[in-house]
Image (cartoon, rainbow, N blue to C red; front, top):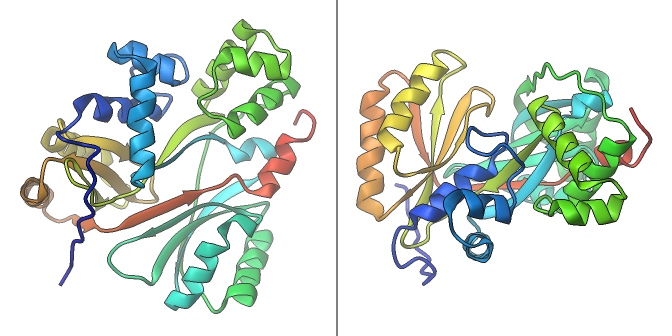
Length: 315
């Protein structure tokens, strides 16, 4: 039987609707913000102070719900590919992979989730299928036997080509995703207007995105949790509309393209509200696998294979 462990914090005396709105804005491009989300941009949209926004984010980082904010380039612009690898292995093997994540040259994301301790999804950055297979063999040699349960390549139609100015801007953003335009300008020697237009063009050409890392975590007021809906890419829009109608005042993040699965981070007042919403989702989505995931952990790092491309000349 699933056990839910509560860790008490005094950060959230009540549900903070401004916080939920701020978190929704981080994922960019989005429908609300034309410019890249910074503390200042989010504060202006919500009509609160930038310091208040930063304080809210810092608190979520301290309790582990917000695992980071990242500028993610589309690696296909560098002649690379992203493939999600579903694996199972002994817990000791997965622990070794998790603990040595930063030393792995070709891993961008690690997702460890569910009540089980033997499942992991990792996104491998690679040149071709032969390179991908060689990386998986290296993992087995270094960490122990892994069982590959499935693969799914991330497909993109982006044809944007980064030039020298784009790469200079990207190097700053990768190191500091929420940096102000003035700081990027001082570090690159590029004008503020040019930087703003370049970032805008890259984002709306799907060459870069701003992606937060959210983790399901049991705090108190609000309680954060993650719902997983396996849809297999069938009727995705219809499912999304139903889910948003049920969770419209509670959802924080909606990750649609998680390889055939929708992941939704939800914040509620208490455990009973969580169970009520979960039951309503299951009843509304009969025939689909709706799962309450606890815990959910994600880690992100731009792998060295991509950093080497960023530090090179124009592509």
